[in-house]
Length: 161
Image (tube, rainbow, N blue to C red; front, side, top):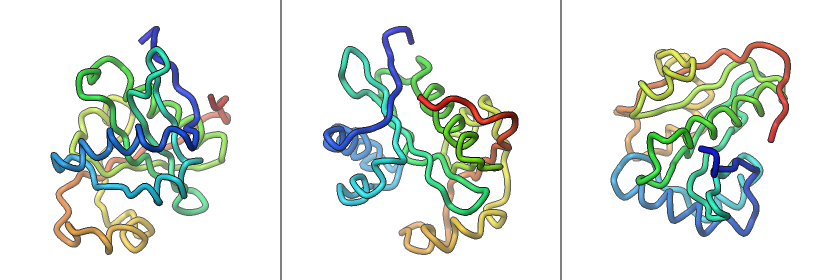
């Protein structure tokens, strides 16, 4: 992990971000994101770099006054298990604390990963803002097979990288 840096995404990162996300979308692990949505939400994203090359990304999306979502979390497959995903989620959680969010959730096929980071499983019905904002437009709605995981943001606002 020493060689990995986490920083805010920049506009010139969009093509590399899209390439990683498209790989995960093709395998059904994540929903596809358009270039337009990446540009529109660029301020939500953190990226991981190794030797200057973008190798992972994740976003904190604000859903409501006290609720955020970790979304579009993806790491180059050959680097999985090396702490890159953890560092991206921790950056999102620090951002959530700095913003004053009380809860952060994620919809995932990897609940064990999020459980290790202090998230716990909840019923999707507890996330009505997500359901009516994004899920109703998803091809998997209403038969979503992702697991909803929730993290309670505690402590003082942390420094955001």
